[in-house]
Image: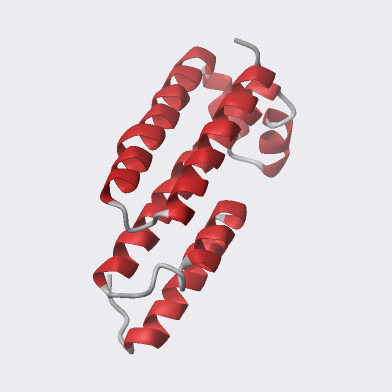
Length: 141
């Protein structure tokens, strides 16, 4: 399968998962489908891509910024990295949902954090953590 087709598939799958998570964040079936289905599929695809493209020289390229830049000029490496981001951003989204649910935070209140996590991963997660600390007046995990 070409990197362009894989890119289209993983993006579509992640987008559908983010829409479902945004529409019904506290629905147990949605959470189960996103974490136990979509994230597992993305992680499995990542594993296949990683094993299929692994090269010992690739590891040495990760030790410098120039090497990393050169590595990401390859479509296969970009797809590998992008699939990694999509999977972990969804894990962060599930964390936000479940943590907010535990702390009885309104599902509407977390929508901006889910959106920012979808668009900018760690930034959305950090924004949620700061919001939660301010809301519950305690820093805990």
